[in-house]
Image (cartoon, rainbow, N blue to C red):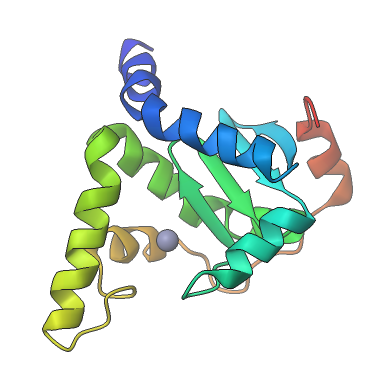
Length: 143
Ligand SMILES: [Zn+2]
C-alpha cells in the first residue's frame, strides 16, 4: 500500500503533465485499474504524428490511446510502462530516450531493443483480444 502511494507520488510530475496534455487535447478520461486512460480524436491525431505512430503511449499513470480498442489490447504492455514510471519517476523519459539514442547510434533498433520495451513486450500475449464493450463501460468512472 505504502509502496503504491510512493509510486504514484514519484511518477506524479509525469502524470500531471500528461493530464494537462489530455485536457488540452479534449480527451475522454477513464479510470481503469488505478490508471487514467485517455482517448479521443485529437489524442489519436497526436499519436499518429509521432515517429513510431503508437496505438498507445504511457506517461506516468496516464495512458493515451488512439481509441478504446487500442487501450484495451495494449493494456498489459502499457501497465508495464506504468510500473517503470513508478520505479524511475522523473528520470524515466530521459533514460528511455537515452537508451533509444544510444541504440540508434550503434545501428540498432532504438524502439524494440530498448530495455524498457523489451520488458513491456515480454508480457504481451499473442492474439490480442478485442475489447468487451460492457467491461469497458464498467471501468468508466468519468469522461
Ligand atoms: Zn512500449
